[in-house]
Length: 225
Image 1: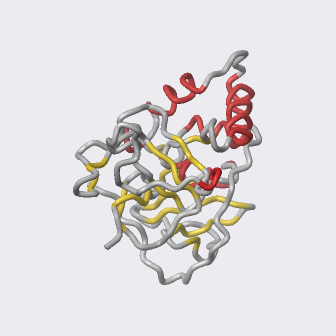
Image 2: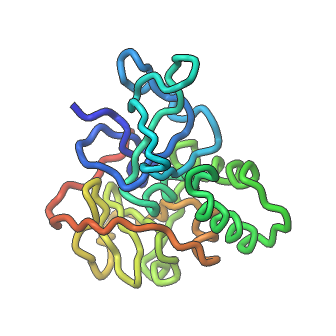
């Protein structure tokens, strides 16, 4: 039975069998006795993206990982970095220090900040993340061409990642066959990636992408209500 620890672009956490390229966390969210999430979806504003293989360290996912015998932080998993950025996470300064520095440098460049800090970045992101009360931004199809690689948009429950002028249907298992333009019809087109992360991508941050294609018939993610 899969544990509830896979994050979709809407920031919701699901129980699915597909594995992710990155792990990360939002603090302590689980009960180690039941291996289930608690009612909360974050316990810190520092939502990070981590390297699954950092120094060969192994954790008991949703187990007791704190030195005290407590749960420790809850492992969450992401298809890739564009997915994690869309959900409101940013690179970890411990296990992904080079990418974290790149992200912070692009943050400083995007907003003309002389002395950027991780807490400053986390505070901004926390007000924009969908899962912590932020709002998506309404778009029209003409807006898509101006989005940077790594941005993720949605029509209803279907999410699409922008890359090299192509729109990649998002799935837990990987990206589907590229489409020319996300279907909009009567369903509003929305930008899911937080505005701060969009600015950082525009300033030159290069996210790490999944390379696993999937069939176009794979189901779309269903956001929690």
